[in-house]
Length: 633
Image (cartoon, rainbow, N blue to C red; front, side):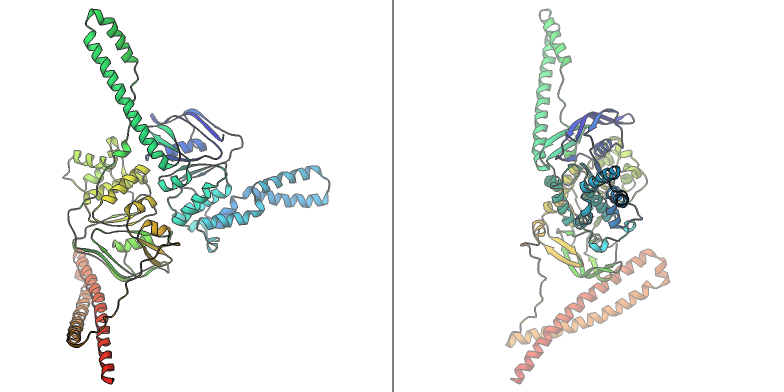
């Protein structure tokens, strides 16, 4: 047994955070810790690691147990490289090797020195225990699994992205191979390939694992036990997350049944006492029943707060069919081409997931589509009637309180209306008066969703919407998005959400875009999945006789009309460009925005008309070529 926890209790001020927590961990345990945001998951971990002292109870480790902990905000040394950080995990081994070299030199001068030989043997045991002579192989194996190719080995830790920083901290911890590995949200910044590698690695990990996670697929793949923190207590369940669900449901049903039986028995006792206490012949029996009632412990009704989080995304305005059009999109960032020549047409009510490895440009593409970022080439246009709302991956800190965030935007709502609305997103009681600056990442996300519900958009742009949410809120959000009848574009690594939406997936990797029909097709893309082929434009085969002459006449008229339109568009664009540079327009930001929008529309139509003209001209040329060949024949 690695760890024994008995009757642990932890207060924060006068408030109880954890109460009567008892469990044990063995050397091969794989335990997933779940619970609502604020349930005490991180507090429990910090008690185990020694950062917090419990107010009551005991924690006992087996002698010599090494504990490794990956925090959500772990720190790296900015002066080291990626490879240097990994080497630092072997620092005791490197020190032992350096000392061994000095001892070997001294042993050569004074052979037969028992003290030197004994010390050398002790150092050799340190190196062998860590497989130090294969240090380089171990480092490269784990760096490869955590998506660090050789060209990144000399990259400074100071310039790593948030995702790279988390992955390197995790890689360094895995290299140390502690007896008890504690991970806090390890999958938050991992892409599919890295998550799959990590899951397979942890299945064969030689020590025990305690992981806080809201990723149900990860919990299913890795864990053999589930600890649920709820109402300050801990309940243990056997099996992975999928096995936990029916056990939890059965436990809640049993508790509810016992509660109802206890309440029924108490009601009968109260009724008997009321009817018999005043009668002399039955007073003693009634008093006996009253003592029985006073001693009776009524089973509490099960609390299922997390299952009550029900909300729906609704809209008022129905847009036109073509709600978003992107034509010939090209996006570059930092000198690297992320996207090139992308055409995309999203129709009303459609859903599209944007997925791909870290750094592929998913969030950048979403920002181009939602209008926050201009592409280097091509155009993006929203259809008439589109009313978008945007959820960004990192919610900005804001002033005021939770209730004022809603009330200031919708002052006609009553306080009861605002509080009732916020309750849909689990802001209840005094929570509505929390300062926004003190909210956690999950609370900020829920507050943003509360705003989006009131915005009533018919087009949603969501960037990693589940990242900071607890597992119950994730499931509620997944259900709400699955029921949404509007148009949805989202970036996500959440495999459960992706699978539940059952929609096409745009997969972005190394500047190339592939389309998959479903999550299963994406997951099996190396096996049987086929990328949707781009539609090929075929020049219409010429007909003969009257039909041939009629078609040629139509083409001539269409080509002439498109040439006239292109000429008019060129003049309009020149006029609008002059207006953009007009000082009077520049001083009026509303007028400037209108002119810029009109200029975008004109340029977009110019691109469309040019494509139509080119296709018609090619077809016309094919007719003329056929006529020439027939004349020669």
